[in-house]
Length: 89
Image (cartoon, rainbow, N blue to C red; front, side, top):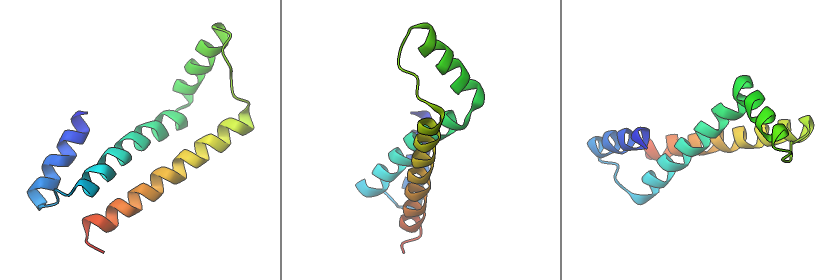
């Protein structure tokens, strides 16, 4: 939440206060953190151990790689759109 607040403060200083800009800031923050977690081997190992120890569903490797790739592409796409909004293209 703190990151989102800083993003909005700097946007306000630049005069970018539209709801669309706020939406893209929120989306890039959320998908960005999710992408970082999905690419972190340590986090994913700990998550897998927790799921396995509680007998919860654990994704197979191909499914996990697919999900990680999809989330990464979504994050990149949102970032590109946010860039275009920032520079008024």
